[in-house]
Length: 372
Image 1 (tube, one colour):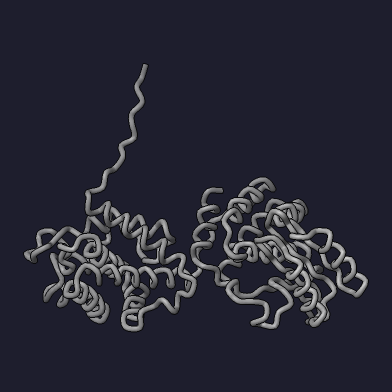
Image 2 (tube, helix red, strand yellow; image 1 turned 60 degrees about the vertical axis):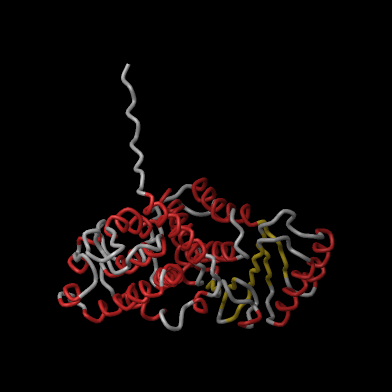
């Protein structure tokens, strides 16, 4: 009887494991920042952005690698790149970047460019430490100067400042991801069961309505692409309110230049107050159709009263309806061909970027698409 070979599990050195844990923890904190622009640093924000966006395929890794090493271990000299450096506190940052930073970069969507899985073998980083030799041979002196200023500052200020700069680097990394649309990796055809399953997973995490708004918008967009006579569909930033833009709803249908159908999305129980305020908005905008797409249990806090209010409004000219999100989406998907269902998945990917959704939602959708 043949024995099964055990899969070898790679064990990271203690410093690398500490760095990996710290990097992942800080990234999760950065992902949940609501107002990212306000979190930027007035002194370092632009410098770090320049290094990430225009630092080529090496300097972004060196930036994060040097700062992460210092943030993970106080005795590390942030100016050293190799353990053979004569500087006190020198370590081999190359392997830390190869083992930790490269895999992190790939997992979060590649805010840093380049395909080399060992970035420190690239010419700009093949030195023992920062200094005259590295500076004299730098092809991009401007970016080298920026990079040196950051690592020198951290080395002078110490461990806690390295942790602060690490957070600032990750803020700029997230900004880069959000400002540059991610490549779509979904399938060309999709079954009803596959799409329903992935939507259930995606909407399973509450997001203050962001994910539900994105999916609702995408479903209506996919529907109007399949059935063009339905009309034009539009939505707005997931972080703004209806009142801020004098809107009729979270998603709107436009016909002949006029909004005539408004959709409100709620990932909580619909209240009588919600219904009343939306009806008044619809009246003011002279809209004849109002739909609530709700993901909650119970769907409404007072079903009988809500139904009476909606029936009363129908006699006044507005058709008000409430739909439970997933059954509603599934009923629409039944009308689609496999290629059109796949187009809906693509539409959700596009809507996440168009509506400015937090990158954690984009990242989760990419993971779900890769798994299909």
